[in-house]
Image 1 (cartoon, rainbow, N blue to C red):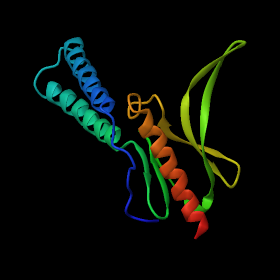
Image 2: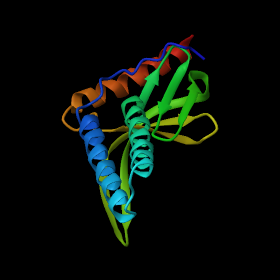
Image 3: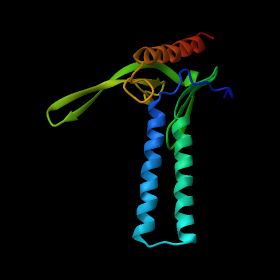
Length: 158
């Protein structure tokens, strides 16, 4: 697959808020762990080091999270795993109005971009209209959707 992956949008400021929130939560967890177990010396350094490493890895994954495109396909980077698909394996790209059922009621959620594969499966792209990247930028969400769809169409024509 192509090695030049491009994210067709800039990350939103919400990512930095999430990273700061996680730093505060892990700092509180570090403090509580040290107090709970009366740690001193090496124990404090070990707990602080492990949780700092967890934060660094988590922050890096949050910053890299998203949808990337290349001439060969699409790369979806999630928090825990990444998924690559070639354009030729993709049947279509569409918007989806997500809904949730609560008993007999159906709750409408925001728009998301789905990729339909030729085998009938659908793949969530992690692109949400009200997500951290597009909450205050609805035009950017539509532009990214059109960019992915147009790249798929161009690849299908060649």
